Image (tube, rainbow, N blue to C red; front, side, top):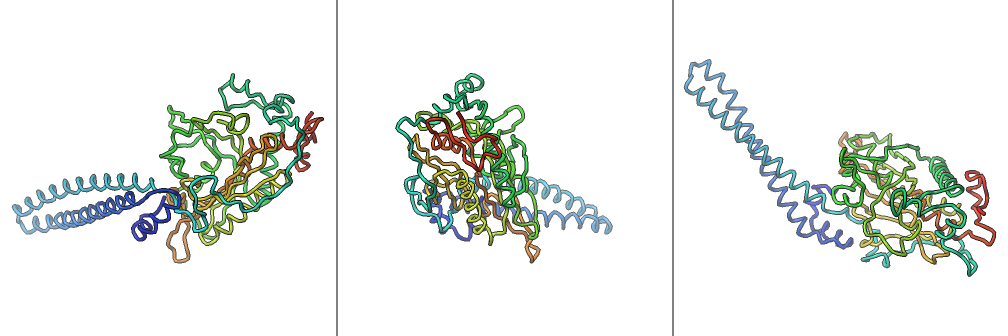
Length: 423
């Protein structure tokens, strides 16, 4: 959430920068400033009325001591009227603050100056590319056929148990899932991230803190009886660990990693481009989250990108790193790098990770701050990234490593899978 200070002091700059994201903020910014003026005026009136109320209340005792009962009674009546007006002003102030808050949360985060111009995925910039493109035989099959052939993943059974987008992993397919999760967590903890295991359901305050609410209710599964939401990513509960926290600079940076299943309704996702593991309603993902001093957050972002890249390299997958353009960025991000791996049988690039710096946008919602040397509190910067999302990694591993005799498993995973091939 943008701060009121930023919106009030730099309205033209806010409008101009949000235009990079394709968001027309001019009317919303003007309305926010008008609502804030109303809030301030109401606060000033309330403060003045309370001062008069307190002063008049103090006069009552002195008038009683003087024996001026008539004046004292008049003062009591005046205090009663002032209290009624204070209550009315407090109600008006609460309403003004609510309307102001409802408007401020509509504004996306400001994109970093590094964000390239553009309206859609086609305008994203390839930063670098690595790995070797596999040369597959003409009989190469997509992962959903390989999964059926080697009895690794049963999509039809998942459809029977739950519905489309909820696959059942079996045998070596299940072991490969478990191996990848352990491998990713080990790589992250060895890089200095502390492992946590958070809840898989969150409350509305947590959803608001990381920007899933109020505008993404339709993308999350909602347990209405308890008003809990199934998490769309571990980022949500992990980042909320430090909601309403005041940290010391010595505690920063904080590096956390977590494995969780992720649940996404993905309404409207149908067709060949989402077949098999390409898009699911439930999937596994390992996440990395950082809390940083503002001056260090972009160096931290580079470190996170390099870390994710090292993992993809160990999996021996061809990959590319994209810097997202303004029009393809998320609501909350200031700068995002996407990782894609090449799926040889499908002959397409598949997104497997997004690594983002949110600057202070999430922290303002979370009220996650640190106490600076001058004893004043300032907002931290939050960052997160997939390290990594499993479904499309598995799709690429199966497709790219298929041979006439089976599927080869990358050497980095042998200690986790306890097997070097499938088939």
